[in-house]
Image 1 (cartoon, rainbow, N blue to C red):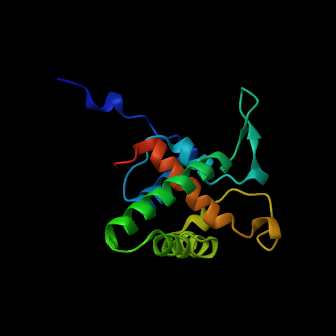
Image 2: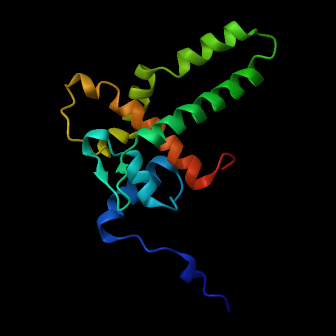
Length: 148
C-alpha cells in the first residue's frame, strides 16, 4: 500500500499560525508556506537569502498585479460583449485601484499577516495592504497555477 503521508511536507511549528490563517483566507491549504510568507513581507522587513537576494513581496506584487489585471480584463470582456475598449478599461481601473485593494485586503485579514518595520501612518506604507494582496495573488499563481 502506498504511504500517502510521505508526500505531505510537515509544517514547522513556527509557521502553524500563518498556515491556519491562510487556510481561512484562501479556502485551501498552501503547498509552499514560505512563498506566502514572502507575499506578506514588506520591503522594510527584507532579509537576504543564501544567494544574497533580498526576500520581500515586491516581485510577487509585480506578478500578482499582472495576474489580477488579466483576470479582471477577462471577466469584463465576457460580461460586457458589446462594450468598447474605453468602457472596459474604465471598468477595470475602477475595480483594480489602490484604495479598493487596500480595503479588500483589510476585509479578508491580510493586514494581520504583514511583516513590516514601518509605522502604518508613514507615507511609505500608504498601500501596504493592497500591495500585499497583489503579492498574495502572485503567490497563489506560483503555488497553484492559473486555472486553480
